[in-house]
Image (cartoon, rainbow, N blue to C red; front, side, top):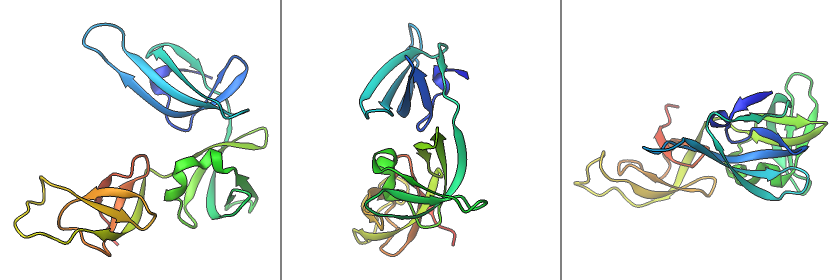
Length: 188
């Protein structure tokens, strides 16, 4: 299936020169003058080599047809990360290099989209947001305005983020899985 380069997202799989590449990041640039382009960082699935490509945003790219299904995260061990299809109860093991830095956001029973190509898991897509607890942050300082300043905080998964001054230790917050940025306090 051919798609415009500007429509590529993290986790998509692209076919180039007969090889499959998983998109690690895709960013479109729209300069005031000149042609808009999309910069894509990818990892070749066969051997793990990372490559960068730059295409015009309207250029057509071949997106590989994969079997994408919803799987629930179970646990991880030396083999990799174990997921289960809730409908068929089939289990698959996703290698650690496929999960990469997204592993910090995996929570037991979290539903993820796993793309499989010829019975081999090639990419994983987490939900856009996840709820985590603040385990360490600076104490609230009187007089700070809530809207203009943020303070550093450590989440329960070990990732650092910035939160508003009114958020303290033990507070559950919603963060983006793409970059770990604070969205809001959890409503649960």
